Image 1 (cartoon, helix red, strand yellow):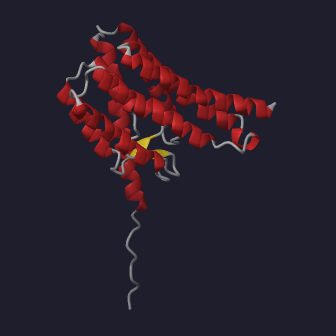
Image 2 (spheres, one colour; image 1 turned 60 degrees about the horizontal axis):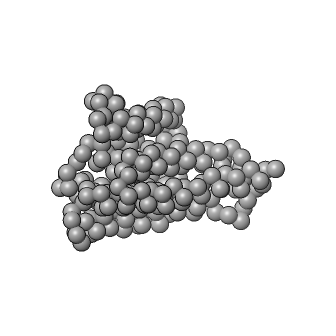
Image 3 (cartoon, one colour; image 1 turned 180 degrees about the vertical axis):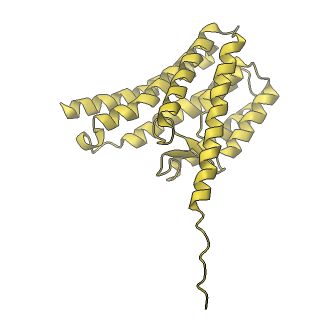
Length: 241
């Protein structure tokens, strides 16, 4: 029974590739809101499959399948590849070949990050901007950012992939775990509200949503600098002669 449950969890994770295919399809159909709903579905799957897998001891019951690798494949497609397709296919990036160049920069940067052995640290943080390109694409759509602003935003975040800031992993980072999970869950709810109200999103959900992002970044910076400070050992004091 445990083995069957473990395979069901892997199937749940793998459902993300179906969502990714639908994201690409509806991006080229110009169904932007549909793609945003699919982003939300993918984030719910990604935010819950790991907790369920640990609860059901999936690694013990199906040791021959690497759940972490499966999760990375799905995450790259839903968090990185599909969002770039959405932006490029719907006029948020420069026209012609330059749009493809801009879209490729996050793709390549995230390839590097997904292959790093320390992309997820031992103390359960993401190292470097954690490839939340679906979140970036969501705000580009909701805030109706222009081509120039979107291009600059993508370039800056692509560089931040390589900057060793430790970003909170909401479902794993132990510090302030309950606050992180509550904030992330509330943000997903507000995301759904904003998507349902498109294209006329009121100010209040936008402010709430961005407030959580500000909290997330501030906490990540605080924990990064705190860990750096803790890792610096005090200088040894030489005994008096």
